Image (cartoon, rainbow, N blue to C red; front, side, top):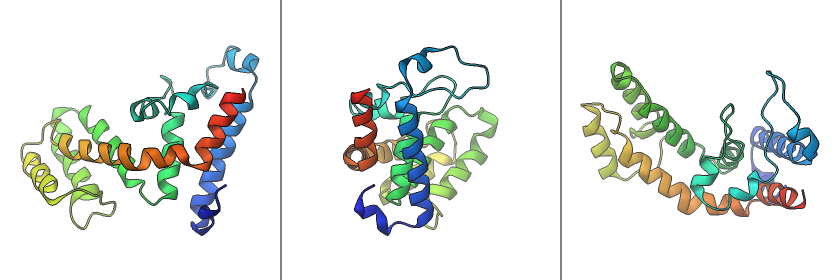
Length: 184
């Protein structure tokens, strides 16, 4: 692991080591075991070349998932954000994605919960948004529709894409996982 990670709290380091071990073991599986029929309760396997696609674009990283599981790339990216103390960004982005699929009758309480957790000035997981975006989002919440967080979500997406994602691609964990994917 990187020397800079030595200053992180032990819980973050332990989680990062767990994810590193998970991805390392998944990448070491032979092609035979990856193509064998899986049982109903088996966890989906990581496609050996999947980590290489994460470098193509931020969208590929976020959407690198099988139908029956959460994204392996997204999990690794989230662990990276935890190590950088900026996990609230991906948590907010995913909460907005979930919000878009919410039934109309439940939009208002869910919108308030997201706003209180991520946007208001004393939010426990406050994301880095400018005053104007916060104000516009607050106004849109008065008539909570499925698009009331679109502007804020777009700003956080851009922040992650331009700032966090390039650092993730240079991280020791990603470089090791992609190296293992290249070597098969």
